[in-house]
Length: 56
Image (cartoon, rainbow, N blue to C red; front, top):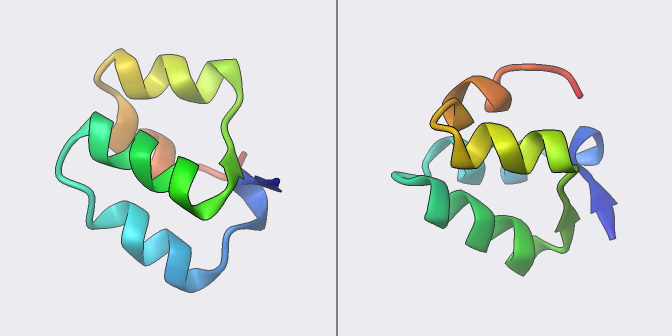
């Protein structure tokens, strides 16, 4: 599994292109990215776009 802070630039671009929280979670699963509870909370709580711009 890959952690969020190990994403490649290509993976980050894919994540930024997601249109919904569900898309982002599905992308993480398909890319083998392991999200923390805090990241999942941010995604489900509506601040998912902000989590893409932070360094985890």
